[in-house]
Length: 97
Image (tube, rainbow, N blue to C red):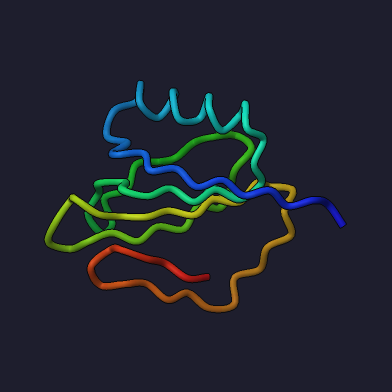
């Protein structure tokens, strides 16, 4: 079985492409296999396309009334992950897979 390494980042918004490039550059350097991103600052169903070639799928949770919250979890493609259940907070503060 492969080693699983996790990384958690408080990204303080990923609204701009340059910020997404900066965060993904850090992810590439850290070589994490599971990513936890906090403070995404997006509303429900308004998440950007997180196109980082080594990570798919992404799971998101946002707030319907505020863009001050939001979390995402991403898995490296080589991680054998099967989603059985997903629990999200209506305020966009947590997501459990």
